[in-house]
Image (tube, rainbow, N blue to C red):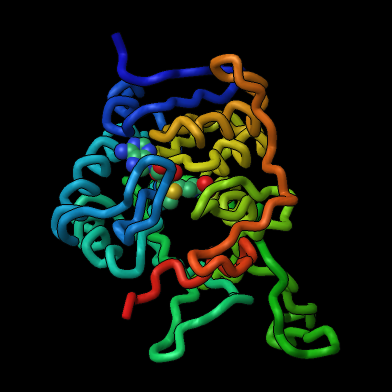
Length: 296
Ligand SMILES: C[S@@+](CC[C@H](N)C(=O)[O-])C[C@H]1O[C@@H](n2cnc3c(N)ncnc32)[C@H](O)[C@@H]1O
């Protein structure tokens, strides 16, 4: 008997179970893109799971084990994107560059409307590493992710170095600093989860590193943002999540089921405002701030 629940509908398969057991169920060399956003080892609470390891070394060792499995699942021309806390990323970077080719170290940065650190510089970014198995053979759809090339000029700039003077291209492939707002309580995509990633972030990654019909895998799916975006973009996907309360989000968000064990699956009721430990009402936005801040 397997120690996970697995549901498939059309192009999407979702697992409720530990990533090690679920990854073992996936065919080797079958995946085009892996997006991994593991727990951070910073004491977040993901449902029943407390995100703390005894030390950085223990956490890194745990990451290396599932990363090893992920690398096996990737096709020879596959790509891997990994997010981690700013503190943990150096360990993972060293491990990754011994096995894959790191092409970009991306900084996803955002603004904060809430309380920020006053005795040090508060954390307003999350690092992402983009690596590939074969640097001579991988998918990168540059023209599908172009953004406006801001020159600061109000008039169209002309390139006079060309034989026939031509206006400069007004779009470009984004660099490695990505400004995208975090998922806020008032946004339609918001789900009840402490570290949901924005659909815009996954859209850029999936468009760049896959083609329609390709297979995307997310071993730590949370609210299943990766599968939702893959579905929207006509890619196949596999999502894994240990907590059943987040797995229920998958079933509803991806249109797989509207009930789970007899329970009707409903979206978040957004009229609720949580109180903090002092009984003071705190907005959801304030609760999400300073993810990787040093605790002093
Ligand atoms: C940082 S969150 C992922 C958020 C996700 N990217 C999103 O957009 O919602 C990490 C998730 O990994 C899950 N998790 C932790 N340990 C796991 C394990 N061993 N196997 C599978 N999922 C796990 C947590 O429950 C949590 O939802």
